[in-house]
Image 1 (spheres, helix red, strand yellow):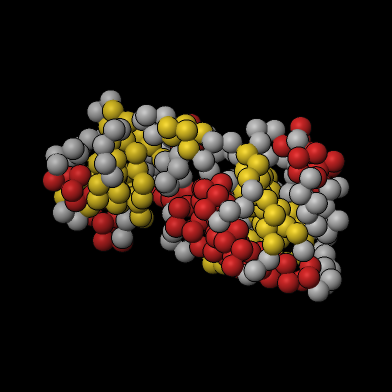
Image 2: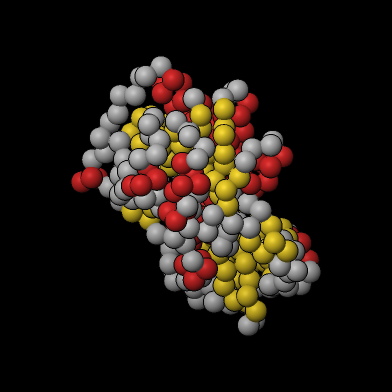
Length: 314
């Protein structure tokens, strides 16, 4: 079996590594073009490209894959596995692979079709998510399902949950290839009536509104950590908030007894943490970063006198 693997971010590396380590023949990797990164804007390959090059796998880093069908066809691959690749495949490309194109999608389809399934699962307060291996067709994540692997969502940030789902994607890829090897590809149709969609996340989506409830704000902070990172302003400067928790009952009662607070007002800032009032309830900030600064724990942020009770987060 000759396999082409298409993926781009770090999230997609474990699945590629799993396929390589299983001894299967990965004849090429397709990924996004190199991009400038860091303050010096150094042209940098995607993590998937870096992995492929280190293992001697040919790479196609194409800005528009649909205009390079002949180059893809030249590898005479039997199937393609895609994982967080970042481009839509045309029918002409899909038809190149006699054993199909299979996508590792980070949700329990048909829920959360689209570009931000991990963030959206946290935002919507789902108890479970997972990885669906589906046969790719022209629609957006509408293909028939080969297998599903489920995982509980705990108290993780998006970054932490992504790491778990990345590993789960690797397990799903190997399991799926086993079914395909054996010709055991009984597929389940998706129920379009139960489908939901999620869009690509922008930085503006991560702007915090402290008039929301404490539950909604904590979900937003965790969903957008580490990227694009939830943020607000403190004394006119941008403040990134990388993690937060709902206040414990004792802190919530203490805040309520102390009087009424404006949404976004810092109720308490000390060794025990930073408590902020919300439209309903309060939250405890645990990891923060001023623009251009380093990430700090709440206690260190307070010790640096960067925040105090009575300050307003907007």
